[in-house]
Picture 1 (tube, rainbow, N blue to C red):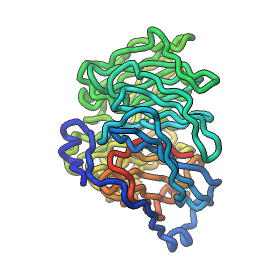
Picture 2: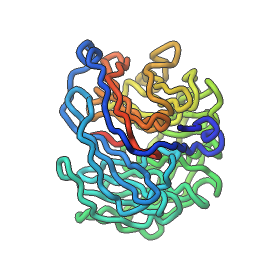
Picture 3: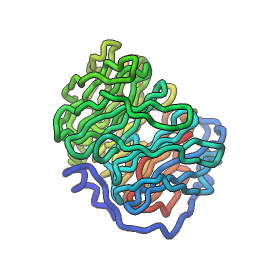
Picture 4: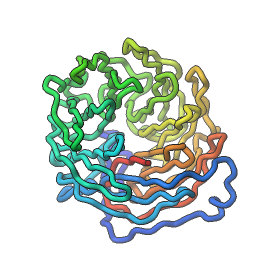
Length: 380
């Protein structure tokens, strides 16, 4: 099983020890029938990587109109995983009609074209660094966060054949050679990049993406809370960042920021307590009204309402909006935010939640039997 607390305290990299022998789904049919807030949603899919050290694979699950999962499929990425957790958010992303994934064990990025329920590998490229852990894409630009070695970011153009072309001059350092990068993401304009750095308790902003796609040097800001990890953007370019506080029991928090057009990052609210342990991944609903953290040490999800100006309020006094399998890490919303999914590294499972209109979560089931080390979560 997983030793999440010590791993988070050291490097926030998770490890586990089962192999892929069973794949099954347990549905809470009564919960599906009784929930009342959110409508059903058009079917789609969920993607993750198994992160196998011998041959990394993408796994795809059909997502039904009621939020349930079925029909697991797998494709080789052409690269290698690490066999353990990545300690990051954004290892798998959907962009237009492509799926992009990291191969952290072979220092590569793989690109797949999505054809309905099938994938076709179109390119595998060096990540221009060591241990790629997070990806982001906008305006046919792809940037990767490399967390190994001294750490860096690097940019690529995505061409019409699904190939990646490295952009000369785009590789930029993190704030230090021991930053512990956790996530990279473009803002909504696609002209500013944000990187969270666990080890330095800082957030770096790269705000000068020139016409050739080259990022300028970072401006680094002190995080409101310790161990900033996952983040997501909400309305008006507001940024919501989870803070794991080194995995200390009950100490994790969430903070909100405003990213100005100039690239300046201003604190709005926080750190606001989740009352849970090791809040590491953060997602925002598509209407910008709610944000949730997955709490790796508490096997729970914490929900917050977001005021129009970006202030945060717990949805549940206990900080527990939903209970997950052990060691929840990555999380993702369906496109209409009617369903929330968590990848649970400690129980090798995916927990499925229906999201009601008031932001409350109803657990509608669990997919069990994922391979150890599975990482990333992209939902469409």
